[in-house]
Length: 168
Image (cartoon, rainbow, N blue to C red; front, top):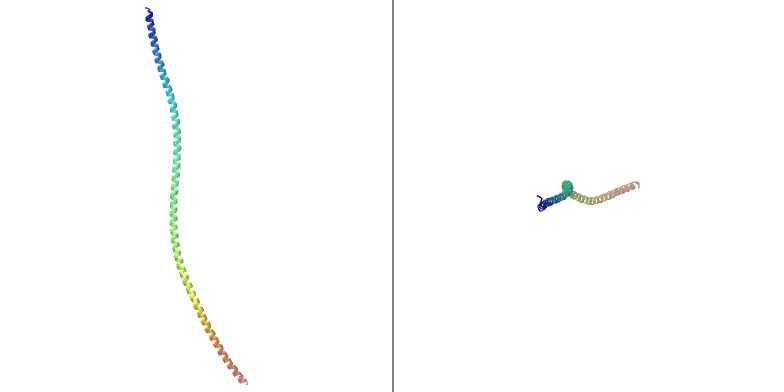
């Protein structure tokens, strides 16, 4: 029994069911498309994040290398500072030794100067005494010579007169 109303209803229900299924299918496809777009966006974002992470890893690696280089340079600098401290300590000790030797030499030079001053005074005193004694000795020698000369003259005159007396 074919009833146009029933046929129309069935067609309408069938159509309605097809439309609902189609709407659900479209809605499901839209959701799936939305999910796929979102997944594509997330994949792109993940790729960008991986690239950023790689860049950060390279940067971190460079920072670590720089840090190691700076740390090594700092250690070398610290070692050199320690070496220079040791050298300075040696120089200070050597300087103190030299200062002590200089002091000893200054004391010795002071003693030597005192001895030289004493020797100079003794030589000056001896020179003055020799000069005085030399003058006294010369005066005595001159007086003795004068006396001897006078005596010789007297003796010669006596001999001369004696010789003249014998000649006459």
